[in-house]
Image (tube, rainbow, N blue to C red):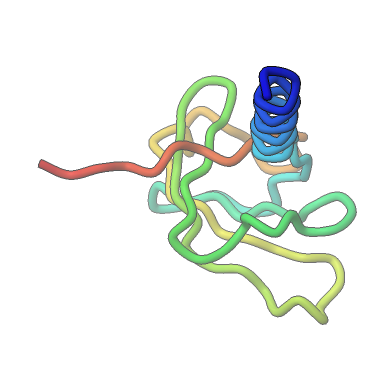
Length: 106
């Protein structure tokens, strides 16, 4: 009985680590436009499953929220993100980001 419980705990721990590793993957792209507190990013490679309208985004120096995503059948995928970092960034700059934490209101 104790061995089965230990096995279940190990499996649950591995599943949790796998899930956290999936959400921590970094997505890379290039900034193609900046304006009005928004940046447009052309993604390198395939779009991660979490990148959807209203998804939270975490940059190295801040965070943002996805406003638009081109259709999945369009290559390359282009997203627009609202962020306070927009004024500090430059067009043609390489950028990387991850899935952010969902914001909760009071």
